[in-house]
Length: 570
Image 1 (cartoon, rainbow, N blue to C red):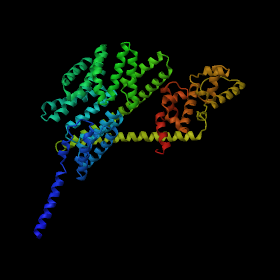
Image 2 (image 1 turned 45 degrees about the vertical axis):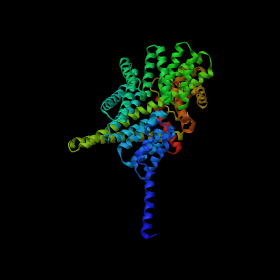
Image 3 (image 1 turned 30 degrees about the vertical axis):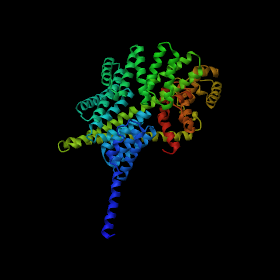
Image 4 (image 1 turned 135 degrees about the vertical axis):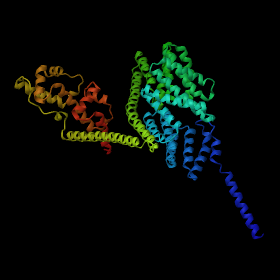
C-alpha cells in the first residue's frame, strides 16, 4: 500500500469518527424538543435535561446552563430537589451576567418557597431580589410577573386594596399581550397570567366585601375557562371561589357542588393551601346540614394538612375553633387540649409571617422602587441630566438616612443591653435592683416601731420566697396576710422602698423575670405572653411596657440579643 493510500485511509477514519461524534451530540434545540411538551413534574424529561445541563457545562455556556437548571426545577417533583436546582439556576445566571436571567432565577426560587413550602418570608425576599434586577431590563413580562407575585404576598397580609392595584397592572398587560400574540406558547402564558390575576382579584374583592365586583369577575373567569382543558387548574380555582361565595350567601347545596368539583384538581396539583380552605368550608356545610361526623372529618383533614406542611391560611385555621367547640360539647378534654394547642401553633405562625412581612414589604420593596426610578432616569441621562443627579442625590440621601437610623437603633440597643447585663451582674436578687427610697413629698403617717419591724420581716420573707409572682396580688390582699391594714402596708412600702406598692410589685416581677432570662437559656424560648404569666402579670402589653420602662430595652430585643450573646454572635 502506497503512502498516499495510507494517508487517505487514515483521514477517512478520522472523518468517520468526527461525523459520528457530531451525530451523537445533538444541539440544545434538539434536546429540548424531546421534553419541552411534557407536563410539569414529569420525570421522563430528566435524562434529557441532564444531558442538556452537561452539554452547557462542557461548553461553558452559562445562559444555556441557567435554562437547563430551570428545566430541572420544572420537571423534578421533589420540593427540596427543586430548591437545590433553583440555587444552581441563580449561580449560572450570575455567571451569564444577564439581568433577565438573574431576575428570573430569583423569581423561580421565590415561587418554590411560596407554592411548595408556603414560606412567605423567604418567598418575599426572593421576589424583592428579582425585582431589583428586573427593573434594569426591558423585559416587561418579567416585571409584571414579579408584580403579580408581590401582589399575592400583599393579599395574604390583608392589604387587599394595594394588592388589587398590582393585579390590575398584571391583568392589563397580559390581556393586551394575549390579544396580539401569534405564538401559541407565549399566548398561553399571557392567558394563564391573566386568569391567575383574575382569580386573585376575586379573592381581594371578596375580602373587601365588594361582592358585586367579585361576582362579576368570577363570571368572567368561569366563562374564559369553560371547556378549556389547558386551563383546568385555573378553572378549579374559579370553581372554588364560586363555592365560597355561594356559602357566604347561605346557598349551601350549590356551595357543596362547586367546592367538591374544584377539590380533586387542586389536590392533584398539590396546592395544599387552597385544599385546606375547601375542606374548611365543606366541614361547615356538613355541620349546617346536621352531619357533625362528616363536618369533623373535614376539619381533621385541615389539621392533617397543617401537620404535613406547617402552614394554613387564616381562613382555614378557623377549623380548629369548630373542633374545640365540638369536643368541648362532648367533654373530651384530651382532644380539646390537642386542638387548642394546634390553634395556638397556627396563630403563632401567622403572627410571625405578618410581623416580618409587613416590615419587609415596606422597606425592601419601596427601596427597590427607588432603584427602579434611579435606573430609568439614568437611561435618559442625555436628556434629563439635572433631574437625574437630583434624584440620585435624594435617593442616596434617603438610603443613607435609613441606614444611619438603623445603625443608631442597633447601637442604642447594644448599649442598653450592655448596661442591663452589667446591672444584672452586680445584683444577686430581684429586690436588690429596686430604686433607693426617697424622702416622701406628702404628709407622712408615723408607724409604730414594733409594726415597722414586723412588716420588715414579712416583706423580707415575701421577697425571698418570690411570693410577688402570684397573679392578682393587691395591697389589700397582702395586708390581710400580714394582719395589718392596707394603709399601713402602703405607707411602709412607700417609706422603705421609695415607691408606691403597685410600682414596687411590678419592679419585683420585672427584675425577677429579667434575671431568669439572663441566667437560664430555657426562658429565652418562651413567648412574651408566657413570660408575663410566669411573673404574675396578666396583660402581655402591660408586661412589655413595664419591662422596657424598668430595663430600658424591649423584652423581644433583649431575648434576641441575649440569644445571640449565648451563641457568641453578638
